[in-house]
Length: 70
Image (cartoon, rainbow, N blue to C red; front, side, top):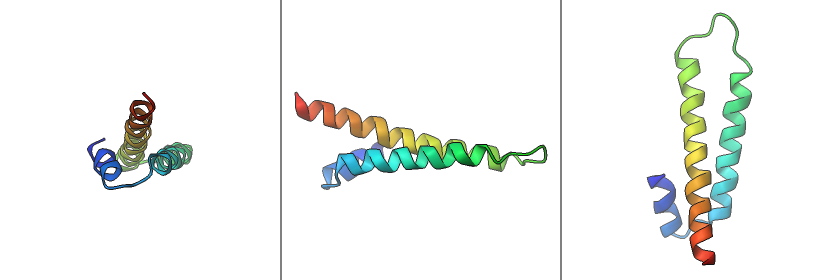
């Protein structure tokens, strides 16, 4: 979330950051469908980390958009 706040302050569009967050979340969700019985712990943790980054981009940017409309 701190990364998205800094990017918004530098002029990055919040809408593009929400789109990037959605795409990261979609990729991580798709990647978890590729698990099999022989999956290593790293391949479970990594998509969760990417999904967390995506959610941080979505909700922090959405909060900024909501504050700007008030």
